[in-house]
Length: 457
Figure (cartoon, helix red, strand yellow):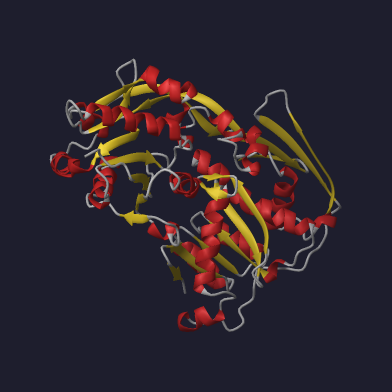
């Protein structure tokens, strides 16, 4: 009987500690990369299995989700969990950050594997580079490998490549692979940025997110040495192109480090959160220019005299709700907030590529999102939001902010300066932030993740 090939495993992991962000959140066009993979793989496989720590990302999709039985030991555990759920004899394995689903390559693997059955039944088939390097993904694994993988994991041998070295696999040569995939692009993965330039422009006819393409001048490709447990090699990484802005106000010049976009928003926001202005009309002129050094900019501000503004120390206490009353007093439901943070995660395009930015968003009380910013500095991102809102004359006391960064005293003080009365974060809240928030009647919400959140007194 010929072998069956109806199952595929997408290794989605979910924590991605190596890259510093969740690879499942990579976006191409207007959809998550794993969702795009699922759409294309449905044409080739009858059973799609996703190995993930966040199965909620796949709710309603035609997939089965599995969770590693052996945690924190890498992709071999994901393959193990997927093979346990698989129904076909051989199971295709692909990582969630690999954008290319190549039907002709998959068919070529199946044909070579089927032809070999006349002699022996291999444990699977994978591509072997001319250099001797094995490509462990975009490969077929025999379902009966479950006990062997379990034995390797229990022995502390977690490397997929080492496992394949010691098994009777059939090898697809580099030349054979190149005939199906020009330039071996099938093995390219976005978050390693092996060739991020072409991927940023187009992947199999799908335009990569326009916001990222337009912000390509904020990124820089650098050759680095990647060291793993078993190997060391050079590849091209994508870094945030951070610049220094020397800001002069009066006779004082201060350096800031940020992305080279929305610099006027930053300047206005910084002036506002440091209480040097109350509105945009307090600024006569802002000029900024790039110096002879490409990574250094200069900005100069001229204020309209010395205006006397009403003493404002933030929001005055007006019967702050107790913790028991906090949820009914919030301008949104817990479910709404969790959903907004999912959208915030998806909006972090630069973070998905580099892991180097914070993402902050400004909302009205009625739930309308007014603005969203990414920057290397959470304080700069905060000021950019405030600067744009100040220029547009938005009443900030009617607004709240969502952030990917921890809520520290310095962030809460900025919120108090502009009368924002609620901050919510994916991350932690510090005790001093809580004390400042209590003084100015600002509600803090932290750890909005996994369908839960913490509301602080």
